[in-house]
Amino acid sequence: MTITFGNGKKAQLTSVGASWRQWDDVDGKKVTAEVFKVAKDPGTLLNGNTLCGKAAKYLVFHESLSFGASLLGVAVFEGSKEPKDINSPGLCGTFNYSVD
Image (tube, rainbow, N blue to C red):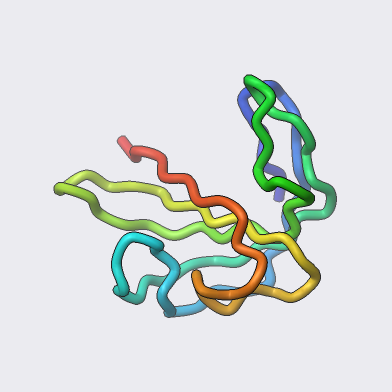
């Protein structure tokens, strides 16, 4: 699987599994999320931003609701160990996108 960013950079992703755990950093609720290993960090994205301060190794995708709106949540982890939940070592970024 490939994810393409706004500036055209791509990252290859490999699924390492789904889990029912606390993945949202806003509340303590459990949600189903899928963890993906990033083959190579995409580097600098739009406006000089990066996924992580260092190299992103895992992306975790989950759905949530905020004020009745559907969101796609993405948690980014660095480090060599697969994250088990939002409190795993290496969390370096969280993003939420509106789903229409």
